[in-house]
Structures are given as structure tokens and as C-alpha cells.
Image (cartoon, rainbow, N blue to C red; front, side, top):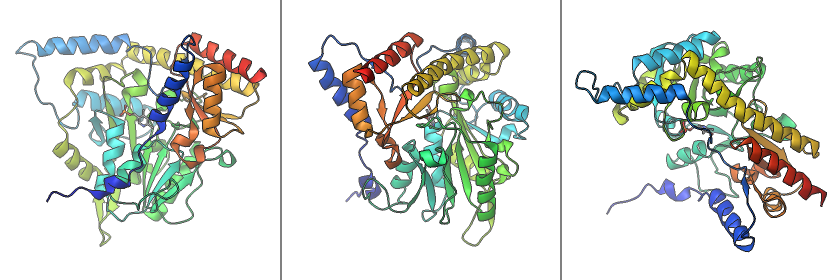
Length: 408
Ligand SMILES: *Cc1c(COP(=O)(O)O)cnc(C)c1O
């Protein structure tokens, strides 16, 4: 008899987006003339940068001629892209990352989900709350937790991100081996300072732990004091893996290209205590289970680093940051406490109301759709996430409607 991996039965169905869709549908059935503004979107809305499109077209043309045709490429990514990434995203910021420490993939979702395969089943895992759900669910699938109780999985250590700590978690009070961090954060939009990040790197070094640093929103950082990469922190190469993506940076959510950085110095240990190169383990996994990102897509990603490409990407992000600043200021004027929205496309708004109650109020009284914070974890209660992925006109209209609804 074929048996299933019963860990999958521990997974909690994600009702978040289904529940949002249901409430929106019911409201629209009752109010057919009302036009809704969707501020819950976690996907980019602007088209691809011109430089990327040109590079992709050219690459497709190369594939049409026998002399320039390419079949399978290197699983880890073409050297032209790995070298551009190492040079522009790391070496230019003083982080000594080499091209052979960069692994190109089709998404940071897959990378952050797959990486846990390299580690033992009984490691202690620390995960932020609220959180991007991939980190939690992939550890549940791998059997590192019990069945959920009151919405939390026994076996995980939850790193609470609250107004009291400015949505940057404190170091765990119990020992942990694998730590997920994401800055600028989804869903909160919070950022981490160099000094704060250094405490995590020092913790990992002292405890021989490993940090998984998700920097998918790195391109939104404008504050010159904030670290773009964990490798700007001394000693991080021994204890951290960083994930980046072209999705939010350059509008590649549908094109698909991302990368993981696994430094050669990064080590994990056998039960006997012998150090093993995590880079070599990831290389083995990646080349065994993945056959590379398509050539035209890697050329399009390379174009992000060209002078025109980087100018266009900056323009793209500026558009979203203008929206985000507008949203944040509008909510603050209305008397709400907020985080995010300055180095992030997300604004995390705190409210006295429970998060689904606030969601319903904005839907029914303002015709605005947001994302209720409770959908991202227990600490998301009393918060909503507003996304800046929209047109400026819609953002202005939505904020006016919310201000009017609150005055009623
Ligand atoms: C959008 C996002 C990603 C990127 O995922 P891709 O698979 O590269 O599109 C990774 N992490 C977080 C937290 C995200 O919000």
C-alpha cells in the first residue's frame, strides 16, 4: 500500500486569500455598482524595464540560429549572470562574495522552501511571527513540528515581532540552530539596522547556528544607514545564507529569476561535530534537482545591472515607494501607528480593532481591500498590511475614501 507523508496532514489550510476573496465577492454581490480598490496585492503591477525586454528579445533571437543556439546551461546559472550579481550586489557594497557562491534559480520561494532539506530533522528552527508562510510550511512538511495547536506548531520557536520591539525580533531565549530573518520584511515592511543584524550574526557564530536571510525587498532600501546584505556584517559569511529575487526588484514575478548566496566559509556540522561546507551541499542539491533558469531570462536579469537597466529599475521602485510614502503619511495623519512604507512596498498599520474587523470596515465603508494581519501569524492580530503595488491614482483615491469613512 502506498503511504503518504503524514506531515502534510499537519498543514493548516491557508484560508487567508480564500477568505478575503469570499468577503470581497459577497460585498460585490450586494453592491454591484461599487468599484473596489485592491491594496492587498503582493504582486508587482508595473511592466518590465525596457532594458530587460531588449536583452530577452536578443537572447531569444540567438536561440533561433544554429551558431548561437544554446540548450542546457549550467544548473547554477551562467557565469555572466553570477559574475554580474557578485560584482554589483555584493562587491560594490564591500561584501566579498564570489561568483561561485551565487546559485541562480527560478525563485526565492523555491530557494527558501528547499534549503531546509540540507539540515537534520531534529534541528531547532526559529521563525518570525508574523511571517511569509513558506518558511513555516516547508518545515512542517519535513516533519520538524507537531500538529498545530491554537494556530501554532509545537517544535518551532516563534520570534515575535511586535510594536514593543519595533517589529524586529529579540534573540531567542532558548537555543536554536536555524533562524529565518526577512528584511525589509514581508508583511510588516520593517527594516533592520546594522547593529541589530550584528547581534544575530554574533548569536549564530557563538551558537554554531545558521541564519537564512531573505532579502527579496532589498531594492526598496533607500536609507543609506541600512544594510542591503547580511554580508555587510563582519563574520556573516560563516553563518548566513542570503536569498534575493528579481521578482520585486525588476517586476520578474511572472518571468521567474532569483538567487541564493552560500559562501564557501559557511559551515554546518555532522553529529560527530565535523564541519561540512553548506555551499557544497547546496551545490549538490541544486545540480541534482534543478536544470537551470532559461537563457533569455538570465540575459534579462543580467540587464538589470546595465546602466540603463539599473536606472529603469530605480524608476520602477521609486514609483512604488512614492505610493508607499503616501499611504504611510495618510494613515499617520488619520492617527494610526505604522511601520514600513519608507524602505519597503508594505505598510503595517496598527489598530484597536481585530484585523478581520478592520478588513471588513475598510471593505464595506471605503471599498478598499487590504490584507488582515492575523493571516500572517498570531502577532499579526490588530494589524493590516497595505501594499503599494498599485497606480498612484488608486492609492490617492483609496486613502481619501478611508479618511472619509473614518469621519462618518
Ligand atoms: C515575493 C517574495 C519572495 C520572492 O519570491 P519569488 O519566488 O522569487 O518570486 C521571497 N520572499 C518574500 C518574503 C517575498 O515576499
